[in-house]
Image 1 (cartoon, rainbow, N blue to C red):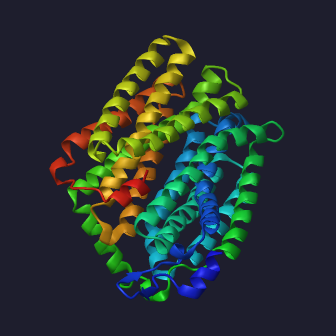
Image 2: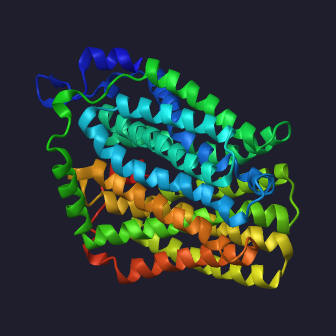
Image 3: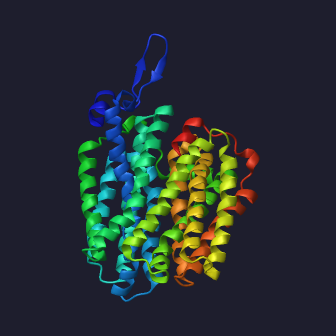
Length: 435
């Protein structure tokens, strides 16, 4: 498949035609069947992230009881994963531009396998939290490298189409993860979930070793070492609009992860859902989130990304404030709570693609580093939101306050920090690819 094409042509092969000279990448020579296979392989690599984050969510109350610890301490294990994801993207993204894609990917998957196995035998919550950081680092390698491989093999409209399909494959993972975790808990305990993640990592490392070849030749790798990377980061941080958009994306992600970390306790302990019912409710919210991201493609035909982003943040803030009111008064019970939660998720589904699209369009010359910084801030801010609600308890009100606060803060940053006149235009292919 891809290995044969890359070996025959090499990434970035230049083909001369009678009338023009153009770059033909290996992906341009793939058949439709080969492209589908590629999307499935890369989608599986990216999907390990949501699976690692979400599969154990139904087990959070069981971990709290089994390890005789607090809900806040258990939520910190989710924070550990997000910290690993954030740091990993900052480190592995630029590293893969220097040494190639395969080595960081295989090393990251190996780290994920080791961490997952050790999680099975974790004696206490502190060890489990540390191992979750290592899991996050491994997941970051899979996420960054899979995205970079698409950029190596495709460009322009082809890149946009493949990446959009890749997002659809990846989108199934957050829906399936809690349901899969709930199913595992019906015949094993929470440690069995980490055993399953270890098996998944082992399968993926075999797939990566035999189905993915190196897609970044030595001639196209970045040089200049740490100094060049630091200069790239400094240039990005000096761009006020870029920083503002990155913060908007991070704060919207914080609202999302406040829901991810708190919903298990709220829906199971406060509202009495069992593990299977929680998996279904969580999956329904994920369906709404993904549906919003796909509807965003249609909206882009009529509106600019700026207009959609601002409207989504306004709607998300309003839904978040309603969520706080319903959580505090318990008006309407579980039904109104879930309705508001799903409205916030839908708003996030519109905001999260457009903020990165606007940010990335400003720095095509350092796209890899910009993507790494963007991902690091998103997961880093998300990591802070996960335990924040737990500090004030695990009920619906603290969760609702953090969710509403994240959306409101994103709206404020968008209005006050991002100079809207300087946003410019978004490349059409990039706009489609990031949705």
